[in-house]
Amino acid sequence: MSLKTDYKDAMYDGQKRYQLIKNEDGTYGILDATVYTQNGDRFGANDVNAINTEINKMQQMQTVLVPASAWSATAPYTQTLSIEGITEADSPVISFYLAGNNNATDTVKAQNKAYGFVDRAVTGAGSITLYCYRKKPAVDFRIAVKGA
Image (tube, rainbow, N blue to C red; front, side, top):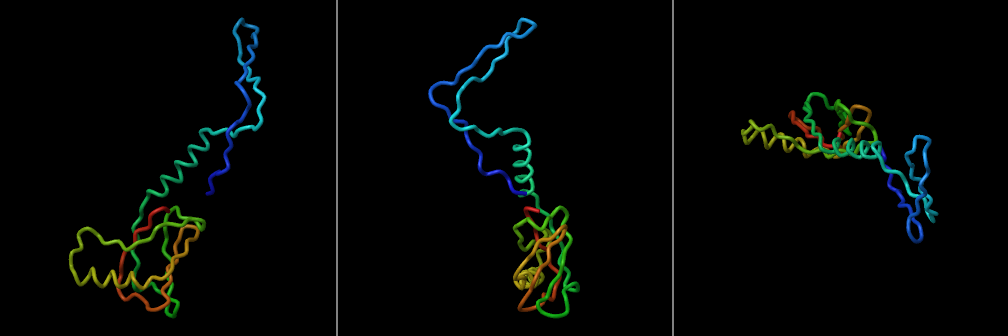
């Protein structure tokens, strides 16, 4: 989603001017009678909701298992992972994810090495495809996807 980035302020010379209009029930309405040199943009609830939706999306993180058995057979080695809510237009941050209870040094080293073979990630509708051009990862590892 692309947010509006060309808002303009209303501009006028001198002071703002208002006209009081008497209503049928004895109350008054106020009419803006200012002569504007530039009309401004409205900024309202739809704009705030769109911005907050994008901010919330950037803060979300999902972890996904990347199984060694699911890579394609030939280079470039590819694997497509399901990622809830991601779109082709997203540019998430992707990183190696280590589960908090895993403290086996050899396992961590092997998983980190496997993640290091990932050269590229391409988003799609509900998925990310990982590409490894040099070598196919030999062990399972997890990735963190933030911003999807």
